[in-house]
Image 1: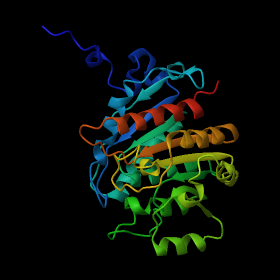
Image 2 (image 1 turned 45 degrees about the vertical axis):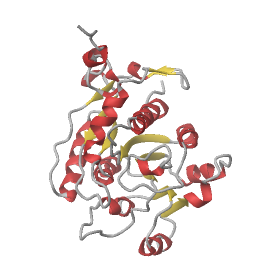
Image 3 (image 1 turned 90 degrees about the vertical axis):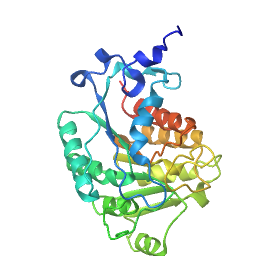
Image 4 (image 1 turned 135 degrees about the horizontal axis):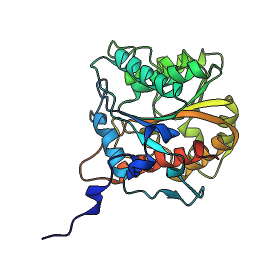
Length: 298
């Protein structure tokens, strides 16, 4: 008889954290999975992203050698998936209601998607708690259309909806429609954009300093995984060449952590590819790093 694989007996939560360390009441951080995928415009499949990310996270170590912290010390509770509805506007509102309750319980919230349209609901809830909020939007696409396919809550409109609530700083953009560019130019500085063509040199951190300076004190971060280069993150619905590399992203996040109060974040648009688990692990490791950078300070 073959030996039992101990992986099968680990808790199915983020990081495979023992249940006593992942209980809701004792946890500072909650993972909110949202398996929504209804408005994707190229390749569907991001509905499978949250489960794949959590599965990949179960191979990570609790201890982060960089920050010298164990994220189990603060408690990370993985919630059940948000039940989806087939309407992007109603789905964003469902995420808003869930995050609002979690913030009312004084939790730090990490939302994992699912398509990017869900992020506007989380931002709305955080905006109510932090009226001076600035949103950092890390994405290959501007996501600034007023509507797409007749839907104002399409995933290609999420940054536009967020910018109507609070100031927005976009980083990594390398795919943009003319109407989106015109809207950004007419925003009177409320929308700042750092294009990938201007930040591709990983040895030049001047753009990072400028982007951090553009943010207010309280920051919410929304990351579409297609912000990464397709060489390390092919598992997205709308891939684009020329994106960020792993350590470039981490350096940027650490600069934000050093000078800003990150109140919440989301990681979206993971579209698992059968047989290629490496991008799933990258997404899980990113969530792990963001928790460590932003939520585990003692």
